[in-house]
Structure formats: structure tokens, C-alpha cells
Image 1 (tube, helix red, strand yellow):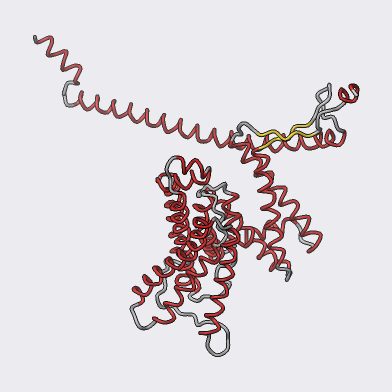
Image 2 (cartoon, helix red, strand yellow):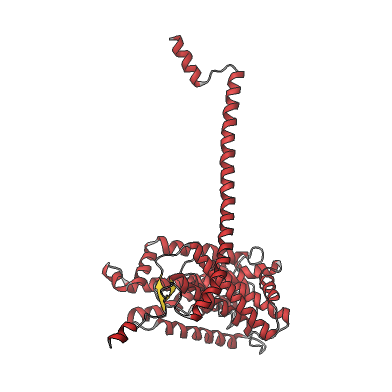
Length: 442
């Protein structure tokens, strides 16, 4: 028995939490994840559609940046997705898992269109736009506060509650369409009265969401309410101990979340679509959940994650056109592959894998030892390129700053020389010389 105990080995693989990781390594891990996702996606496309990697890569960029209209459409989709993500962010920071952004935005869009439908032509368009904004934001708040009240009062499951509220909102839109559509078309008329003033294509929604990003970031990081909701998310008991009214914080946070969703619904109806249907949000409320998680609840990082999702969606849609495929599921599959690898890389940012080693300090397993021989040189190669680029960029900025300092010093020297020359030409004594003359006179 003692011999068996002595022969027992440690586990081959240990998962150890990292104490800290540099920003450079974090970026490097994510770049490697993107490269692996691209390779896997390319293999899948080559096997199923006969598409080569260069066509795939070209379609990704041409879909988002191929023309002026493509760029504006990409920015518009980015703004809507980011706006819904910003709506979910305060609730998620509080660990209130609100997955009802679709329904809350859809109710805002519906109520804005109801105002236009019944009041267009009866009141001035600017006033109608303001009324639609107020009504849409109020509808979003109501749709978000209902599950918040149940959570605060009876501790219901907010995930299921908000999910079911999405389907209720969809059915309410369908009922309104059936009741008000004309000519048996089962569609509502496109109404432009009360429209949001648009600046150059889609610039108005983009500017609104950009300002909203800064406001939400300031709200969460630099306000009392933001501190309270973060503390409730970390520990409800601690929040109660320091005297925070948790129920009040839950309801107040969902008011903020619902108001932002209502604002996005208003933008969809009054600024972009000028009509409402059951697919007005395009299921972006669910995609926004991924955007918030990938950004680790950072509102500024959410810009990058939202852009990545939109970039992939538009790029793969362009790819379908290029290769002449009608398989719409390719867009979802490719996007999911990239998201899977990005989520996976966050694991390696927080943890590292340690292998059991023998007396020669080699991995005590032939297969993993072979992988180490193959992967380590590849990793070192890409690391060398990455750090070389970083050092090159750093040198450029250092030299630029050094040149600016030298230029400033030379400017100061030339200015002093000019002053001295002027003083000699005009026989005006310099301050030091003047003091010496006064002493000699005394």
C-alpha cells in the first residue's frame, strides 16, 4: 500500500490562475485567437463552399468598407448594437441578467409608431418627434421595470421573466399590425412625419450613441448610483450592510436600462425605418449580450467588440453574394466561430496551463511534448514579430518626441539670440548689464 502511494504521480495538467498579465500579452492572445478563428473558418468554407481564404478575407473588408454606403451602414449597425449593449451594461454590472433588450426596444419602437400613426398630419412634425421620444422612452422603462419590481418584491428569476417579455412585445406588435394594416398586406405604411432629423446618411444615430457611450461610462464610474449598483453586483449583503437600499437600486438601474432601450427603439422608428414590425430590432438585443460580455463590462471596449460582430456579419453577408451561396446560416456559423475563439482566449488571459515535468524538465507525456516542440517555435516567431512592431512604433514616437524637444530648444536659443542682437543694435542694456552699470555708478 505504501509503495502504491509513493508511485502515485501528480496530475499531468494543472490550471493555475495568473497573478497578473501585461497588456501586450493580452493583445497577443486575442490576436492569436482571431488568427485561429480565421483559419478554422477558412477550412470550413473551403470544405463546404469551395471558397479560398483570400476571397473570404477580401469579402470581410469589402462588406464593411467596400463603398461609402457600406461604411455608413456598418457604422449605423454598430451604433444600434452598441446602444443596446449600453442598455444592458448597468443591469449586468448589478448582476441583474436582463436579456429583454429586444422587447424593451421593440416596445419603444411600437409606441413611437403608434404616435405617428394616429397623430401624423394633425400636429407639427418637430412636436410629434418630441412626443414620440418621450413615449418611446417611457414604454422602454415600463417594460424593464415590470420584471425589476417582481425581482425586488418576490425575488423572481429575471432571466426567464425578461426573456418572456420579449415574446409578449413581439405579439403586441403583431396584433397592432393585424389591426391597422391596410389592403390585406399585413404591413404598416411607412410614415415620415415626426422623423428624427438626419445629418448625412446615418450620422445622427451614430452621434447619439457616441454621446450615450460617454454618459453611461461616466454614470457607472463616477457617480454615486454607479458605485451603488456595482456594489450590489459584487455582494448584496455588503450593500445592505453599508445601508444601500437594494430594491431601490434594482428598480432605478432597470429604469436607466429601459430608458436607453426605448431611445434605441425611437431611433429605429423615427430615424431609420419609419415603420415598425416584429423584426425591427433584428435580434440585436441578444447579440448585445455577447458584446457586453466580450468587453468585460467596459463601455469603451464594447465599441471594439460591437465593431467586430458587425464587421463579421456584414463581411460574411458579402461573402454569400460573392460565392453565390444561398446558405444564410454561414453568417451565423462564422460569427459564432470567431466569438467562440475570443471567449476562449479570455480563459488563457486569466489562467495558464502547467504540465507535469520529469527530472529532465520535459513534459511527462510524449504527445504534449511533441506539441510543445511544434507550437513553441511558432509562438516565439509571432511574439518576435509582435514585439518588433511594438518596439518600432515606440522608437518612432520616441524619436518624434526627441525631435520636438530639440526643435523647441533650438527655437528658445534662437529667440534669446535675437533678443540679444536687438539689444545690441538699439543700445538697450540687458537686465544683467544694467544692474552692473548701476553698481558701478554707485
